[in-house]
Length: 279
Length: 327
Image (cartoon, rainbow over all chains, first blue to last red; front, side):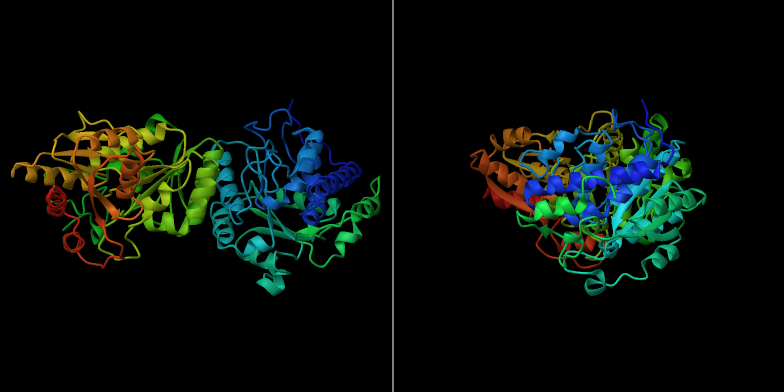
């Protein structure tokens, strides 16, 4: 059975995002550290896509007509695993193996894991391959679309802009790029490491239909998707301003939150701050 | 002088080594033949369509051809994406740009993911007089160290054409060196059959083995003929596939000759000569070995005949190496 995009139900999307955040904390607690901030920060986008937009078949992740979700930023795997488990592509129980030796849920997502379209992690690859996928799907006359998730820091890679040129040059209206601006990369905020702003104007200048929204608001994401789909002949950039660690103030406020090290006693605090039910 | 149709522009004309017989744009025409049979074949280039002979394909199948501009990372990445939607992309540029600029994209996008991508790399070794920026002298060393990747250095027009069809049928990432424009014909298309991973014994002889790859095989055959006229009988083993390396054929030949000369259109570090030397030691073979190839330098610009002499890459140099190792 193919899962078609359900009528967007904001309440359900918010509930899923909350559940995915609980999965993220669960996985991170097992390994004691990790990309918790990214997993929490991107949960709203992933919930919106997997439960409001993507056409896919959980029983057949390789369905040729599926929409592709392409994770450039392999270290966001913790967020993606939460989403694909929640979507039924991998068993929920498997989340217990996150980051363990021999597990297919590696800390940077490998394409051998169901629901992972390609091996990201070496940043600047995802959009180049997404361009190729979008060209191939168009050549096949398929209506399937490609949704690529990049990060702000990834926009420092030259290949991102090579691909941005190609997407616009070839008029790939079936290509959507989400750029997660969480304002944190390995060595600090991009403004200190290598300035990017005004980032949305760069995408605009490269010929993309561009919007900039609050990436932690599923309603804004749905509205941006609707607006993007109404534009033809151009690829679509949706720049997301997100809060790392969203939903867990303990992590939201941590200064160095690219790769969070968590003291054992902090997990209970984090869980209680997130809460049992969606806010 | 007018340029014949389907031939690379005259500024960078190919050197044909004074060949008696040549073929024009063998890759481009072979790709068209393969694409007529397989509608999933597509082509891409990074602003080098005319100079990599893929313009022949682009003219025939414009809807299946994608111009990517001067952006080699995007070229290879896009090809990988096309492969992931079930296409068989042939992506062309020069060897220097494919391997130096897009290495990570070949390693991760194509090889780690086993994407069905064919990277076709022009101007291998000393096939251009344009200088160090354009001469792909170390690409085989780089490519051969990447897991999952098949690496091919064809000898002539016959093999370029055959290999194009073979790699189109093979499911997996391939890096193939391209001889473009007017290309010498060395091998007889009626008797030669290119196979991935299989070296071909083109001539047998008990005195010395010349193990060669790429266009150096034509020169190795010339050298062997010259040696024969002086009573030295040389075998010539053509190793078109650098990876997977045909260890069995190479070791079997080395086991029955006292000395070996390797010949490659590539630096002598990390290419065919190194693979042969590794194998000889691993197999416990006691052979004397000389490597003919580009020394550990960036080459000058100049005419091809001048460069071949300057860097001792000609048939006489192979014959001289054989005499030296026989002493």
